[in-house]
Amino acid sequence: MKKILIIGSNGQLGNCIRKIAPDFENRYEFIFTDSQTLDITDEDQVNDFFYDNKPDFCINASAYTAVDFAEKEKEKAFAVNAEGVEFLAKACAEYKTVLIHISTDYVFDGETNLCYAEDDFTNPIGVYGESKRTGEELALEANPHTIILRTSWLYSEFNKNFVKTMLNLFSQKDELGIVADQYGQPTNANDLAEAIMNIIEAPQKIFGIFHFSNYPETTWFNFAEKIAEFSKSSVKLNALTTEQYPTPAKRPKRSTMCLDKIEEVYKIEPKYWETSLEECINILTK
Ligand SMILES: NC(=O)c1ccc[n+]([C@@H]2O[C@H](COP(=O)([O-])OP(=O)(O)OC[C@H]3O[C@@H](n4cnc5c(N)ncnc54)[C@H](OP(=O)(O)O)[C@@H]3O)[C@@H](O)[C@H]2O)c1
Image (cartoon, rainbow, N blue to C red):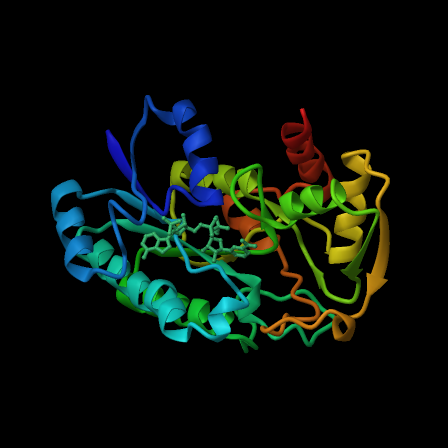
């Protein structure tokens, strides 16, 4: 039976993979690890783990994801998002493991009116994006069997994310200001987990970078409006400009990614974001 190692299983994506794993347990053995059982910044631990387990697939769902803190914790962000990824990729190369590594739309600067294709020029504008871009490069360099999935605006019923923060704030406030001039594509982490399993099941693997998100693009303001609508909240939302809501890390203005490559190569059709959001809100509010 083929082995799938999941790194960072306690994160949003890790939990979503855990949720669907029972559907695949007759074909794959899943090994779920967290930062306690496998810390990717410890090269010896990574090598020992691979030596003991020799996985066929490694899904790296781990990351340093605190976009604003990263501005002050550059070393920490790079340790997990770049160096740790290289340790994993090198171990994968040693055991011919397919590495499925998750990256972000924040590798782009957001200064475009078109969607970003996989091979478009990257130019991260914050430390988090920089560390993730370096991780992409190191992973591709160290292991020829690497598939990078860039995703965006990830949320789920698990852990901390924009949807859960909004629901929480809606229950405490009558009025909220939300940024309305940043564009991107929300992604339900359950859809990403499904896409990853589809790739693992694909008879032929094409390696390299792919974009995966829900679609079409929207703004944080419109996203919040839909969260309010689906959760039947009467909160009043006010549109803000980025200047009116300063954050330690700059965000790309428009980081919408083109999704046709993953559709053509792996026949994975991204879902409409409102449909996936409604599914998540139904879980969170039932
Ligand atoms: N969240 C978003 O909006 C977003 C957007 C675009 C792309 N992404 C990417 O999508 C992927 C999944 O994100 P997510 O939101 O599911 O992340 P998450 O919920 O923040 O979870 C990240 C996990 O990584 C683990 N981790 C951190 N350092 C580690 C280490 N040294 N060794 C092993 N595990 C470690 C954490 O474990 P502990 O809790 O035990 O420390 C945590 O469970 C990441 O690659 C992220 O960069 C996320």
